[in-house]
Length: 431
Image 1: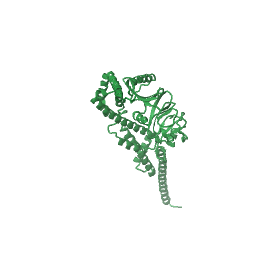
Image 2 (image 1 turned 90 degrees about the vertical axis):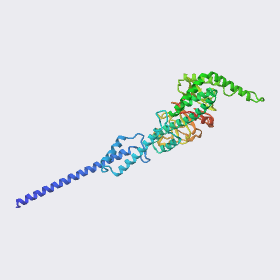
Image 3 (image 1 turned 180 degrees about the vertical axis):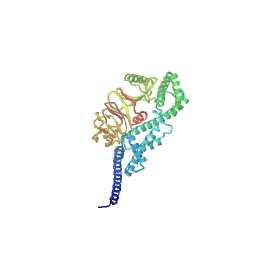
Image 4 (image 1 turned 60 degrees about the vertical axis):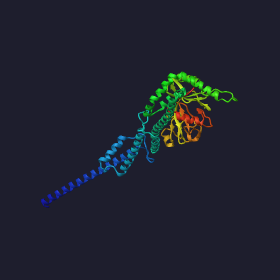
């Protein structure tokens, strides 16, 4: 029989041994739970990072990102001192942050060009626009790219038309100061049109007083100057005509222009057109003109363009795109698609699939029969053209030999001139 002291000693040893084993077990369990939790956290982080991509392999971010979740992941990485989130996930997160920062910077740079909603800032230049244009190509999401590109396109149009307006007003103002009678009906119409096209506050303020002076002078001398100008042109034509040739009246007839403009005004008012500018086409005379409302009536901005071919129904359309190089662009022609009529710059199959377009490939040159997409690369006549549409009809103003439904054909020179004067969004009315 063992001594009681020995038994007591052994009991204490076993007790400590069991206690130690319990502590080790608990510590092991805690480590296991931590590792398990770490694995779960990283699995979630991996999923959240991947979910921000439209195409992970091509590094295409989604249009709308989940910023609250990304900010939460960023805080976890910061407070855990890199112990919870794996190095692999940290690298993925940093790459994603880099892409997002670049996107935000591009947005910011485009927004910085705007001075309010309807003007551009004084520091805008052709070089700045071109540099930013190249920067936008780094955006791989076509929807985001197109949105930014449209905003930059608007700035470019505003910048170029303001520059043209400044040049025209400078020339006309100088002529007016040299000879008041030089301010014809056509010129005062163009003065007001160009002044309206100015999209820079500094330039507009600079011309405000001069335009007011010319408007006031023409208003006070309109009847007299019209008669004098018409008579002067008739006399000059008669004086310059060779005796061996039959006399022909001067080509510019102000009275005729006034009568034509008056009829246009009536037609546009009856059609509910109220805009300052409208592109007007008369199917009976095959005449096309950019009209500007001056003192409640519409006048031709720069005379009338002869249309060499037309197949278009009467009604109202909208000028959607001034196409200068459409080789890589496409037009959604599926009338059942909610994006019907949408013009897609630098189109590709993936981007079109995001717009609910399937099987977009075709080689059809006639946009009326190309479905579900018309690729401008299939028709060289339209890679430089004016695209217009309404809810049911797509059409083009272009120069070329082939004729299509819902189209107007004009000369190359007239097309270039018209594109320099037009802006997207204005009404195109066919009478």
